[in-house]
Length: 72
Image (cartoon, rainbow, N blue to C red; front, side, top):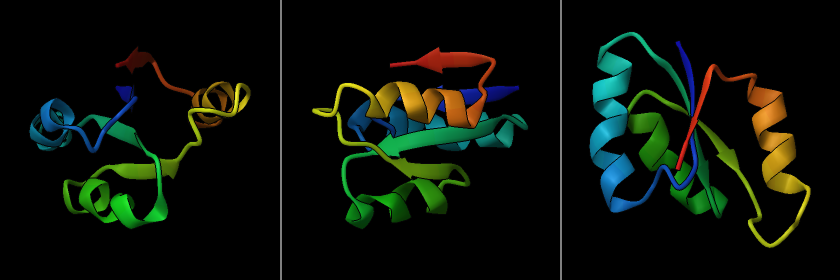
């Protein structure tokens, strides 16, 4: 399953992301800055930097990742 995790560097997702990857999920997670993408990569996910204040950026990120499921 392809998952899109909004806010993947937050407290909840930083705990759940490794579990999803261990269950063979292809997880893409958002980060606000390139400095935070390492956390997603270390958990086995694919990071994507998204400016949440840019109205079109979150939509473009979801479309690009082509997920089965979007979670926030």
